[in-house]
Image (cartoon, rainbow, N blue to C red; front, side, top):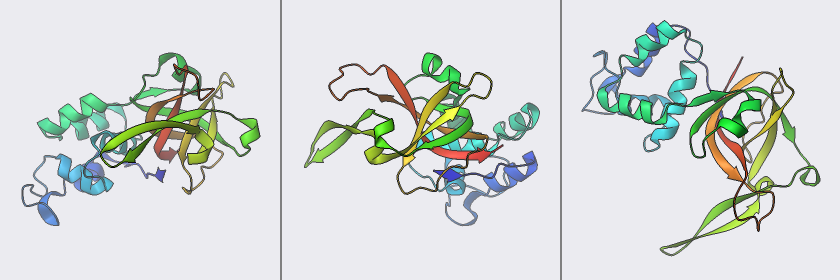
Length: 208
């Protein structure tokens, strides 16, 4: 998971995001008042994952007010505007995600994370793909084999929700943060046919 430092002013966001073909892309122009996918991808270090691109953009603008954010978004080219509307994250408190969140959707959760360190304290299984030549099969593994798992707490209700990021990433601080990622299915048992729970596969966060 990567920590993002949000823009403090819309002019800073526009200046950095509208960096054109200055270094890398002859099809875009610097400071032309239009932000393209290529430019956003360059700033975020992303080139093929449009869903993550929009997560990066949304958290980068998280500390701007509505008017300032709208000013930046107005600079997106038509292609990027369509992508933004397609993948625009829903934002929840931890107590709201399980009942309201949508599987595979970009999601932002605000709360206080606490690392779950013992496999004995938590059971949960995820489906992972296995490639054999050109054939892809799936198997169920414990979520803690692949991820560091956190409970993120809703301060108002004290209800928690599970978030996870790939092992080896920097640990999250135990203070109030805004975390962006993609909602995925979690099963209580590897033989369970239909998942009834969700967790957030986290990608970015900002301190609050």
